[in-house]
Length: 169
Image (cartoon, rainbow, N blue to C red):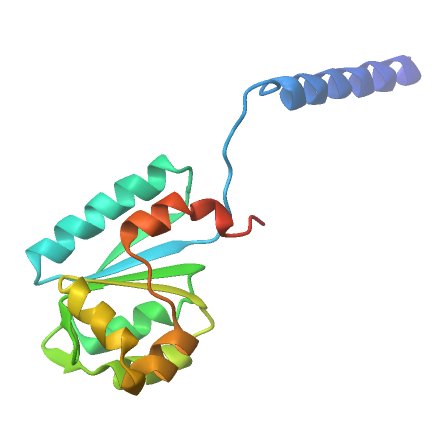
């Protein structure tokens, strides 16, 4: 009797596993890395807030499940948040050729580079409210070693069109 009961249980478990494993059969699903994409924005900037929400929605449409938006109130808040080492870090702050505004502090590009050197995240995207000025500063020899080695710049259109280039886990 015990043998019959254990065989029945084993067969039941096998059937359940078979049903579960084939329930999504034939339904293609886009699946990206389960690692976190973290969007940071200046909490006092309405344009940055709007851009971060729009970016969040677009990223979710591409199938990423682990996306978070973090309002940043100060430089200390910024440093704590980036210490979590997300897979992709998107920074949305008001910027110009001289740097970006984080909370009440203006950080030059070299200072930002020093802060970002201390984190493990290598996929860092900066989207500034003055993107054209940021692009110009990237092309200047003065900033070339900072910006090209420490992080890379994508416009949001390029990022969202190329999300598949990031490896899945």
